[in-house]
Length: 58
Ligand SMILES: [Zn+2]
Image (cartoon, rainbow, N blue to C red; front, side, top):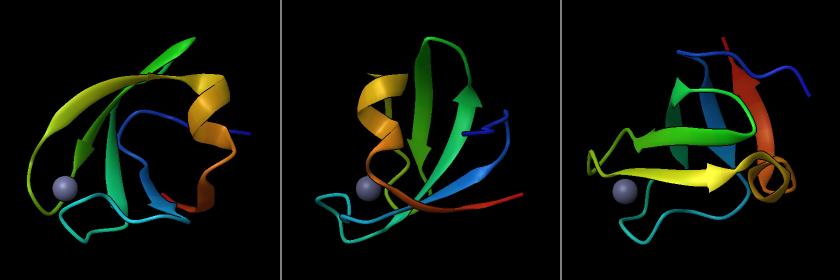
């Protein structure tokens, strides 16, 4: 899956705040993601996040 910094990931499951959109701050073996609604930032392994992505907006 081709994911780059500044892409917006639309997730299958919403964040606890209700938003499905996450911005990619850092890409690699681990991703740093920021929720576009509540602004929370978190790290997650690539293998874990890829399964949850519905689509990628460039
Ligand atoms: Zn959120």
